[in-house]
Image (cartoon, rainbow, N blue to C red; front, side, top):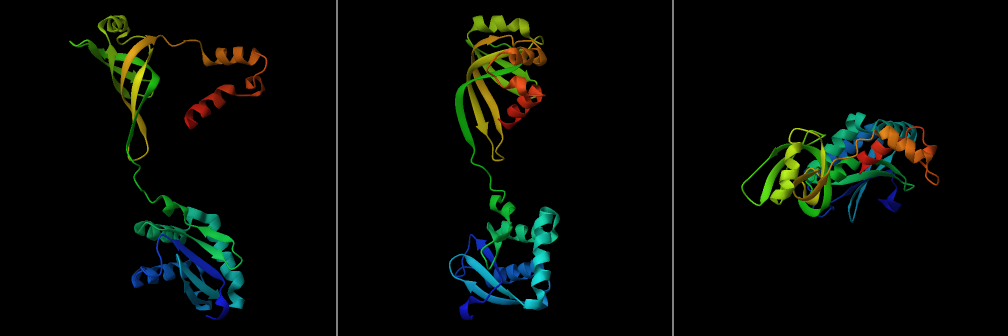
Amino acid sequence: MKSLDWSYELHIIGTRPAVLSLQDFGELVKKFADLLGNTEKIHFGALRKGSARVLVKVEEDAHDDVFVQLATARLQGQASTKVVRMEEYLQTRGWHGEVRSREGNVVLTFARATAANEPELERTVQQMDTIVGKVIKIGGRDETVPMTLETSEGSYVEVNVRGRDLAKRLAPYLFGKEVRISGVATWKRDQEGKWSCTGMIIDQFEEPDSTPLSDIFDSLRSLPGNHWNEMDDPIGVWKKLREDN
């Protein structure tokens, strides 16, 4: 193609022309044409070297129609079946991509395919930590006493109490008040990226402060040099920070 006369480029990241099968090439071109619309006015331009880059030329009288098609697809995002079909196809191949204009502007990105359901690596870490919950089971014959804690989120954590003396002090809390336990915790991340506590060696515990959050933040707002007194809903901000972490 003389002087690479083209209008739009489909840039596929994760493959290259030398290994791109004819079947995949055909499917990509077809889905690209569907995205652009007005297929009678769109012509194949070239397949660039490097990553697979499919160039197309849009006839002059169809420029506005194609622009509207791409702008609509961009606004609709996942609501656009044409975008979803392209993303799903790329995802099956482990690729991702984007549509660029001749001027170099990114018109569309197929970002969902970038994170193509690749499972995260399982990971286990140990760290000093605290957990708050209710004791629902405690007892055992060994020096390290097994205990089950139910958290406020409804999950159950199997822990071990270091020493019988500490276990005796925890026993009265069975099915009673919440306790805050501290020790070396084991956390595991699964393939979905979720972390969970799979165990803890408890060295100490205490009853959590039962003061209502509203009272705590009222006292904080009265202290000079902090920003809590500038917030209309400090409790809401605090909860949002906990969710983000």
